Image 1 (cartoon, rainbow, N blue to C red):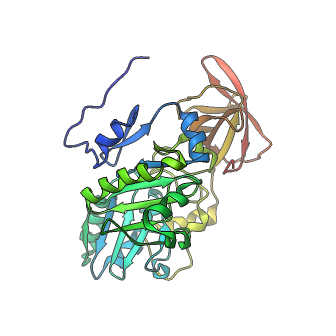
Image 2: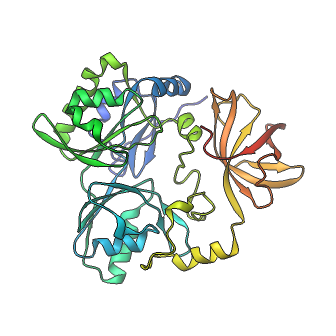
Image 3: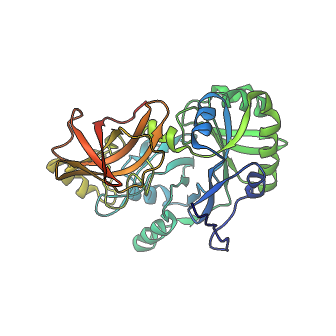
Length: 368
């Protein structure tokens, strides 16, 4: 296969850890929020097994923060999300859906409430900062919108707890899931959240001081030797098995939360309005016409391009959004948008690939 390379320019930013990860066996990048995001450190299945058994350190600085600060920061936050912001507490993270005027998904960030007039929106891969600015300007809100220089290090895997205890002390083990607090390392304060884009447990370190972050990065590998620490990145196999949706892959601007199985993150009963609320009420009243579901396909291919149609005889029943070979299930598993009338989990289908039809079945998410 012919290799291609990413040309680095000012439009494509590196991270404070780029030189370090490139010396640690990085084999591929992707582009995320106009930044380099590590995509591979060798065979996907090897990284998958290591993540589930040990601990990895990820450079996820591409997970940018949109900061809302000022008198109307809460009002703007509420206008963008279908969760009830009045219930948000300082020191907690909230998985929140950013909704447009059609009731469709712009982004699915984690929102951190730092104070009564300050929020960090830890975004997936879309330009939420521009969206927020447009709303604030149009509504005449008193809020400053910026992208602070925050570069996240994720520590993921079952041994992440032991590693983080060695770095910042045993108090961190008391932190509840989706909580955050400040911890000291080498006389620098780091905001650390118990979160991350895997289901194997771990933490995200919101680094505000680049030099201190680089020192911490090195210390994680030094102290993590006894736990078999390795560099890593979000793992396609693990995230699909866990049913973790990828913005831009599994859903986009044309999909609404109910089609994506995200009902519990939508509050249509709160008093406050948000963009797209009326449209989502209409969706509830009319019912959805398609739904994200899991699929299992009798194939041993590791990579299948997304967007492939799924067939019941000559009828297209849906489209594949993401897929990978799963060592756990010994077949290809994926996430697909399935049309109404085909939600039955006992229903089979065909994936036609390279003039060959492979059999598959529909299932619920997550797989594990």
